[in-house]
Length: 513
Image (cartoon, rainbow, N blue to C red):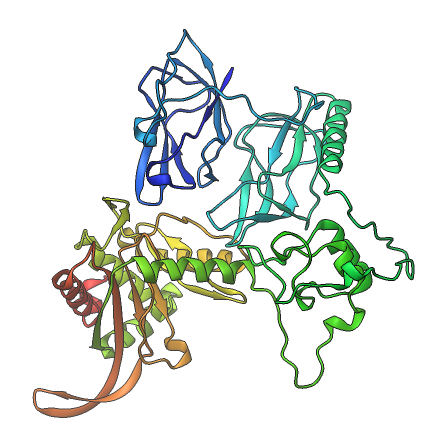
C-alpha cells in the first residue's frame, strides 16, 4: 500500500481544497485516470494517477484544505508504476508519488488516528461540539461520528476510515488545532493507549529548554524573575480563527486564576504567544475594566472569517452596481393574499421572483472557478441570515422549480438550521439575496459572496408619492440594488435581469402563479 500525496502546486499556491473524488474506495484505476478534483486559488485542476491500482482509503475529504506533501489517499498497486521524472508544474499534469505517512517513533502501526479536519482556508482550529458514537463502537467510512464547530459553522464530520473506535481523544467542548487526533481506531485498547503515550513523550521531548514550571496551587507561584517581568508590548495576538494565541498550560492557569488572556497583551512566546510564565506574573484583576475604560476582546471565528472573505471579494472581484426602484403595490397585495394559504414572507415572494428571472439569465446562475465559468442548470439562491456573531448564508436550491408554498417551507427550514449553526448547500449557491428592509433601510449596496455572480440588496417597502401618466398618486415602492461580478455579468445583462425582475414583481399574480 502507498500514499497519494499532493505535489507542488501551479504558481506556488500554498494549499488546495478537495472538491470531489472521481474514484471511490474499492474502485480500480489506470495510468492517467483522474482521481480527485482540486481547487486552488485561480484554477480547478485534477490529479492523475501514474500507474494502475485500486483506491483503498480516502484521507482528505471534500471541502478539506490540504498543503503540498499532505497525504490525500491510500492505494494498492496492480503492477509496477513508473515514477515521475520531474516535479509536476501543476496538479492537472502530475502523477502520484510514493510517501509513507509520518508517525511518532514507537507508536503502534495498527492504530489509525482520526484528525481534526480543515474545513476551509481560514480554519486553524475546531471545537468538538458533540460525539455521535462512543468508545467501543464500530464505525464505517462516511458515518457521521461527531459535530465540529469551525470558524464559519457547525458541520457534521463523517469518518474517513472504518474500524473500532478505541479512544476518544478530544472531549466535547474542547478546541484543538487542525490535523490533531480527535479519536483513535484500533482493535486493541492497549495499542491505542500506547499510541497516546508515545505522542505525549514526543511532545515532552520537543518542549523548549528552560520552560518555566508553574504550580496551580493557590499562592504557590514564586516571585517572578527579571526575565519574566519583561513582557513584550502590544495587544494579545490572535490566530486567523480569532482565538488568543496561548499555550495549553497558559489557558489552564488563566482559567484557574481568573485571568482574561485578551487583556494581557503579547506574551514572551513565538509571535507573542502567551506562555504559562506570562500568566503567572499577570495581575488577577487585569480582566476587569474600570469605569470609562475601553474593553479589548478577540475577534470571533465567524467575524474573522466573514471579514477575510469579504475583504478578498472586494479586492479581487470587479463589482459594479445597478439600482432600480419598483412599484411595490402589486407585490404587497400578492403577499397579503397568499400569506394565509402559504405561510410565506414578503422576502419569499421576492426570492421566488428572482429564481424565475434567473431561469432566463444563464450568466446570473453561474460561478467563477479560476479561468472557467461554471453555469448551473438551476437557480440556487443564498439567503443572508443575521446571527449573533455576524452573517451566514444558507442556500435554497432549484428555486425556480418550487411553488410559493414549497419555497416558504424550505426557506424557513434552512434559515432556522442556520440560526442554530447548521448551514446547508454551502458552495452550491450562484446568487444571494440580502434584505435590510425590516430595519427601515431604504437602499444599500452589498458585497458579492464569491464565487457567485452577484447579490441583490433589498431595501424597505415604503410609502411614496409617484407620478404615473402625468398624475400624482401615493403608493408603495421598493429599491433593489444589484451588485454584479463584471467577469460574468456586464452592464447590459444586469439591466436586462433587473428589468425582467421588475416585470415579475410588478405583475406577481400573472408571473408567479
